[in-house]
Length: 335
Ligand SMILES: [Zn+2]
Image (cartoon, rainbow, N blue to C red; front, side, top):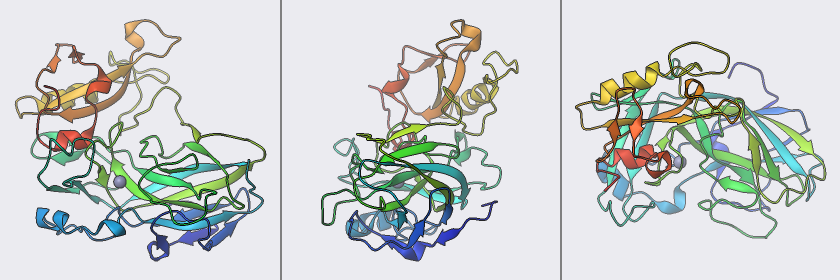
């Protein structure tokens, strides 16, 4: 955390679930910022020394803690709290688990699995999975939201109109998130930090990692949002992932992306049972291929992915197979 912030909320100030009766830890005025130190999503039940046997012992009443809550002075129902995600300070380790009975593909992946990650918290170069799997890192918070108007204790697992466990990987540094306020003060909490995740958390876990973050709070009176909204720092360029924005033909240019790291990832993955799927995106105002931008690179053991010499996947729609968690299960994602 490089800038001083008015307040700090520590991991001991965690809670499970949402409840608008939770007593705020801190009150901020619009324009103030806070440093948060959330626990990992297992609330410390898993550590760098954990094994697959520990996955089976997880106490589900003690998962996905969030730190807070924060009361934003002047926030009333109908307003929006604007949260600017200022910075993330990753810890250098994380875990990914396949938890039996949990996740979108629970019926196909029934055995517990655990992978402990070590990554360079300073450089954020891609984390290694086995000898050849390189997973791009992009720290973000999976759970971020406000307390709902409905009284009582609400599960942390589903996201709601007021945000929550959204697991949107764009909740990274530079993003401005607008959360609809349902109760006085908003009653904000954050946690479930991830070092990396695909679009969706198919196996139910990302690279779960303790990561400190700083956020600034502002107020938009009478915004009347029905759902959270957000803007990212680079419009149309979603995945920072440690790659520098350049064009995909290797030429440098304003706001364009270099395909070189992607091609490197493809070469690294070749022959090791993994395929790197690079997803390209073309901004609406730039129709020619030269300006296609590298959106992200994922590694997956997918049968049926064919990569042409230019390094582009053939015959696979990116949205069909782009979740790191699923790739880690070690089974083909595509039939
Ligand atoms: Zn998570």
